Length: 60
Image (cartoon, rainbow, N blue to C red; front, side):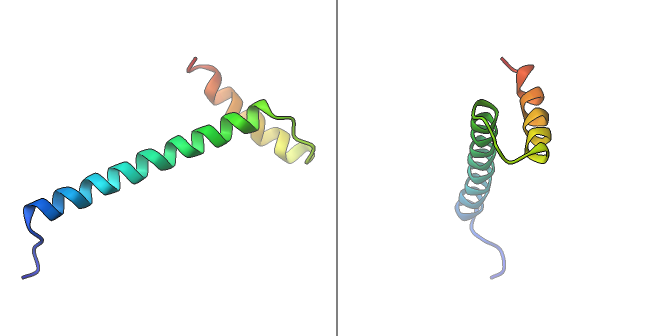
């Protein structure tokens, strides 16, 4: 009995896809917040901010 029933397999696949989608949405939102807020953490943060901002500028 190694194989999962078909329904269980579907559920796991859907959960995996949902988690991945939610994760990318959260990461996207976090990057947008970083872009919109002013950071006082020095040049390293500024570079990272610029990278994520330039990535988003083409979308809108």
